Amino acid sequence: MKIVTYNVNGLRPRVSQFGSLLKLLDSLNADIICFQETKLSRQELRADLVRAEGYESFFSCTRTSDKGRTGYSGVATFCRVKSAFSSDEVALPLSAEEGFTGLLENCSGVVSRRDESVVESLKDFSVDELLKVDREGRCIITDHGHFILFNVYGPRAECDDTERIQFKFKFFKLLQRRWECLLRQGRRVFVVGDLNIAPAAIDRCDAGPEFEKNEFRRWFRSLLMGNGGQFFDVFREKHTERRDAYTCWPTNSGAEEFNYGTRIDHILSAGPCFHGDENQGGHSFMSCHVKECDILLQFKRWKPGNTPRWKGGRNVKLEGSDHVPVYMSLVEIPNIQPHNTPPLSTRYCPEVYGCQQTLVSMLVKRKSAEEFDSCGESSYFSEESTVLQSCNQLVKRPPHSCSSSLLNLTHEGVFSTPAEGPERYDKESSCNSPCNEINGAKSLASVENKKKARQSHWSQLSLKSFFQSSNSDNSSNLFAENKLNQADIFNPYCKSNKTLGEGGECDAQKEWDSQQSVSMQEENGIDGSQPLENEKNNVAIVEWQRIQQLMQNSIPLCKGHKEPCVSRVVKKAGPNLGRQFYVCARAEGPASNLEANCGYFKWAASKLTRKR
Picture 1 (cartoon, rainbow, N blue to C red):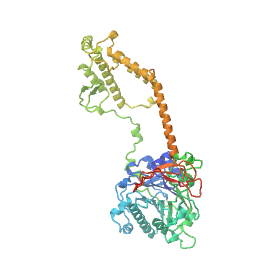
Picture 2 (picture 1 turned 180 degrees about the vertical axis):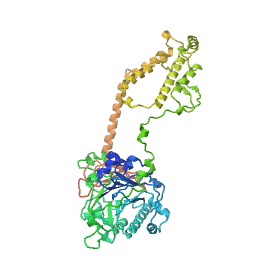
Picture 3 (picture 1 turned 90 degrees about the horizontal axis):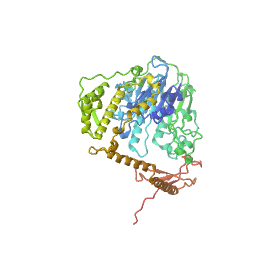
Picture 4 (picture 1 turned 180 degrees about the horizontal axis):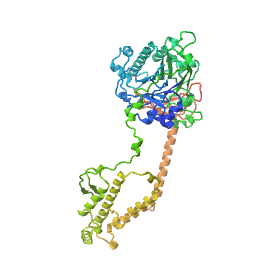
């Protein structure tokens, strides 16, 4: 059996990076895969993000919006199984629990049955305190029969953030009580995930003299067997002296390039081995069942051959998480009794299965809208167009009602055409100006376009339509329909008091044509404005180049490499918030490496001091 833990730094970008969730899971090639920092809220759970063929998944999402933490953390456990029902595979859990206090409701709104021993171990804390810790979506517990797996994403706390430091203390204190309760019952416990704690100086690139005195590091080391605890740090047990074994690197300084990181992703194990004679020498879970534990460095964002930051690489976006996976291989793990997937599985989550369409619903042709009983007719004219409102419920209107309403409007005298008879046509032409004829033609065209739009709204394309060459036909039909004669063109300069000139053309029409020709000449540069415009553009380009050169000259050179620095802005709250400064452009690395960042720093502008 293989177990993997991986802080994905957002599940959506990782799925997009690999092409699908299934490809991401298969790339890890493990039986149990634990993700941290999924950054998904329960409303964002979709089948393409949580369901993959051959895997059962269990999610815990952020349920609080304090300080904008919605979709901030989140964990997920994926179990590779052959069957989700009547399966004897150890990878398929017997039960699953969101959080570790037993107070959170599952996707069906049911609170898990709390073990009396769990209630007893957490009695010192109020319900509000327990819920506050559990609502950030930082833990999923799965019971696999032979062991209980904790998928944990530990809180991060800055040294000056007292509130988050207290939250982090409470989080790990509650977790430890839950672990101890299970170990007293004789259960085996695995803890995997990003705990946001580097236990020793060997696990940190820039560890100083005071590094190991940190309270969280002291707590972590107190859990280990070497310090009187019950857990093994599986990686460090297998690689006692390995240095530069890091799982996380800062993204803003390019530290991956020189492997300048920290080891904060862990796999811990506690409990007896399966042989039942652990009291005898040489028997322990580590020695009997843990075959291998290592870091999957092939998932690093920085790859050999990438362009260095100081040679333009800082502008190249690296795909991937700022963490890499850690795995543990187990041997001699027997199967368990047949069982089904727990109710917490996403296959039972309403947010996932409740929104999925079936193949039948996709292939069945949509029924046409039902005809409505009553339909009103009204029309009004604006200055530029005619708006028709023929039905009270436009969504339920069948296509043929548009043509019938148009005929009714024509009979009522709203529109008139030569087909109605010469007497009526002559009568209306004697009292209307050419512009009114234009408006009438435009109104007819508008009605026809509305009719086609409504018809296309209700019509559904057939499979046959995708294999027909309709581009040429549609373009020719569109050209024929839009081809208007001289009287059908809308002319804004023509007014009703104008008289027709020779050839039936309005004086304003000539004025409009002349202005159109003038505008075309201006566009073609006949009046000589084009060379002037080009000259202005050239002047602007030269001035911008001069400004860029001036800015380049004002950027200082770092002392270590004599290369231009990069500018940054202080984003941390304090007296220097928003202030600009310059640093070395190279990637962060150890001081012994001359190719790494030289540590140069300079403020962009000194603060003015008031003279006394």
